[in-house]
Image 1: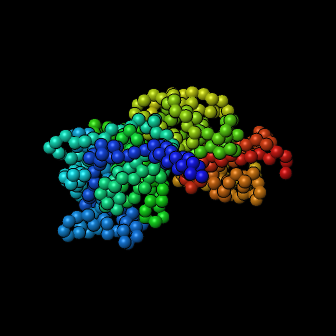
Image 2: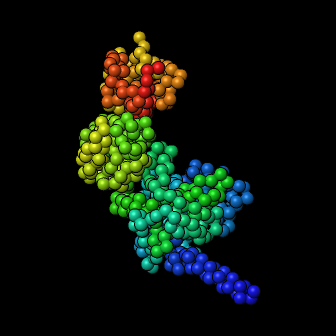
Image 3: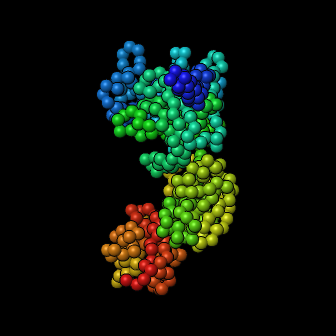
Length: 465
């Protein structure tokens, strides 16, 4: 009996020690990296809408933690805070744009309690990054940026920041996913976010996310929450984006991104069949801007981009992530699927400055009712076409219940500009289309809905109804 108990205790001890050895020890990383992590204290020129939204999400008992000044409290609607980190020994600091947006004064506090007035060198709202500069008498500890290609789902990561004004707190977790697409309010989608389950809260914004080598793999930027605190869904800007933005701001004070000039959408199963793809993948070009890099490079509406500059494009969100990091003027190979066949084009990437809005002008082909695939078509009013910037198209005035068009999601009011490979500029362009439909196949329809282009795959009935 005693022997059995002894064996049991030895086994438990062995398992406990094995488990302990399997878990990472973060102490060395924290000791080496903490001196380069800073707290950002901000007084705003005017009320900062993003900060106010964050504050309103917090329970009342937590808001008091944001009174960070000694002496009289700065009015809440004019004060805020966040985190950041030093990226060079001469005092360049990275943080989030939303932390310093509309700032009147920026103060950087180091872990040793030293404080410096900071100069805002430049910002990039599209990536939510900002670069500051502080003038210290001594060389500062700086943090290296990692090679993002080494980041893997499931690896351990840790963050240092000042959540709820609790200075220089350390939290840890794992990488939950890579390449998350989180478009901004203006529709920009240039950041392939790293998703983690690290406890990130208000005040962590702008702080570093580390790997186990002590390298920065990202900048903590956003959380998903219903309570105002962490629920295990946090998002960081990857190091590749940070390096690109910081280098441009340091050199030019502004950021310029690669730009194609296309509207794109995902490819579903019906569309994959329609365009001759082996499976749903790629970025489907719904619209090509006039005199855009895409148009000059020979890209057409209906092309499916499956590879850009050697990088596979699995979803439409992947394309802006890749193109945005390419220097304007670079000639890139683009692999597309056009009418069921793969082909490669060379496109010179254009540039989009920080203050520019990415717009795509229409380049669509331009007069009783006609029914096809359950869509009741009528001529589109010239005024409506002109308002949308279209030179042609026919309007869907009704959808037959249970029809292929209804099943595919076509809506009354949509403007049809292409069916299959045939441009539809006026009603007579629909003549003879039904004779070309293959029973059981899927055919792509290009529509304008709410002023935006999109493709929908319509399944042709296998038998006549």
